[in-house]
Length: 320
Image 1 (tube, rainbow, N blue to C red):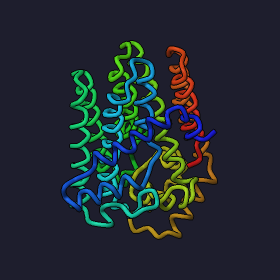
Image 2: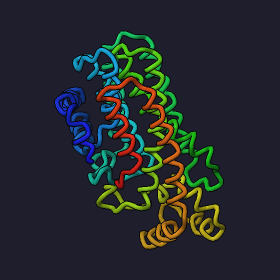
Image 3: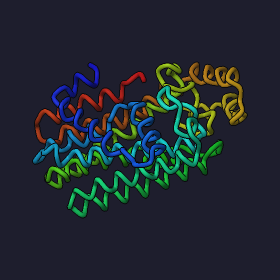
């Protein structure tokens, strides 16, 4: 089942989120506005806003209130992508030129900062101080994750614990915060809030591991960028860490640098895919996915609970 079909009961509210996103990134500066719009129009699954909306369904759901949280979380995610693209010197994002490619790094960095600022401004509509504490802590962790990714580039001696800590900060905590903040905005019982946060964390870990697998198994058309891009940029992911347990593969992988040719990258990707590392990485993703599904069973029964279960399975089994 496609994601859109699972969430058909949210279609109207998702459309409101899309409209609000476009309104929020409007800027008086033509360059800021064009650059922000370039990123928005590249699309995305809007996973974080969806989790905000679904979590709000466990309480006093009011789209006019909860939309501010949903838009803010998506903007934070978008801003982090802009900064990521500068760090990685990426040329494509979802098949479109990145902001740093179309303009330059300075415009990209200030665009990311502008989008972050708009997110924080939106969150002021939520008066609960816990919401602001959670959001600020999440942004701190996200920033630390970004710095760790820079520090760990081409560091082939890192271990799996380093990887898990990095994806926790860069991906899982923002998805977990989306669930918790959506619940707070709808005055959901605190016990349920905590369950939703746990669910989001486990789903976020599974989501990122699948992303890292797809970087090797997906096509350029599916990924919107060349396969193996993470490794070429020096980002050491779970499949790579498992592959380096083989001395022969380790020797090949450790030769990778930013100017490695496309043909050489294709050869290394083929070697990785011929090994068992994709299956081993999938097993770890499934471990987190199953933890998320067990949390779902502890939530109150409603349509949102079923949707969370369906989305978790979609995320854990997606092909691109």
